[in-house]
Amino acid sequence: MIQFLHVTHTYEGAWTGVEDVTFRIEAGEFVFLTGPSGAGKTTLLKHIYMEERPDAGRGGRVVVTFPNDRVYDSAHISLSRVQDLRRDIGVVFQDFRLLTDRNVWENVAFALRVRGHGGRFLRRRVDEVLDRTGLTHRAHAHPHELSGGEQQRTAIARAVAGEPYIVLADEPTGNLDKENAEGVLDIFRQLHAAGTTIVMATHDLDLLGRLPHRRLQMENGRLRTRWF
Image (cartoon, rainbow, N blue to C red; front, side, top):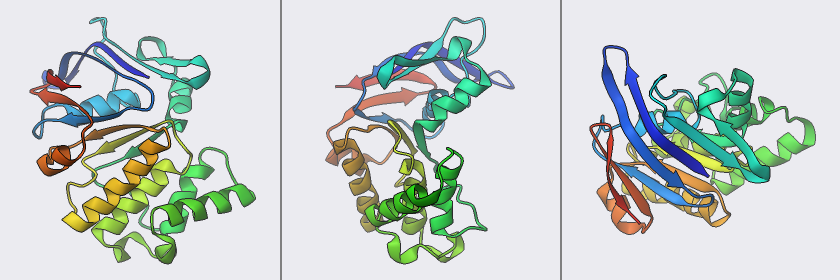
């Protein structure tokens, strides 16, 4: 479960990223964050994995709760606890952020190694994830040899390799053609069907029209409208 409680975040220069935002996402939900560029969608995602924190002194909090009642509260969390939190959250960035000096297989394996996995489990899990995302035949290709759709699927494979409870995606279809976008969406549908909580930032109206999931609409840093 993800809870935002009166969260405000101001960047340097007094630019407000989000202002007094409150909402709740239940475990296993698929939720869209919508709104134009600069509306605050990416800032909200960063607060979930606690790269950003609510403004001090404003009383806002982000609380993420995992199974077995593991609770991470932005109001009083240490750096080591933030690292623990991120082990159970997969993030798909808009710009992919692939390691350019490693091939597809190694990019996905890296995500498992930083979680302490190795040996046969790591090899089996990487092969499983590449098969699931349709990348087995590109396992030895480097990022510069991949199409945009293949790079996006590699980023997703890396994000889900550790079987996170939550997957956050920032405009995952924004740079893709219709065919590749549909392939990426199929992966997210499968993840959601398996019980993963999905939070996806997008302004793709075609995408929103085809998937009947709850929407949280942002505008100028504020949560304006909710569709349930």
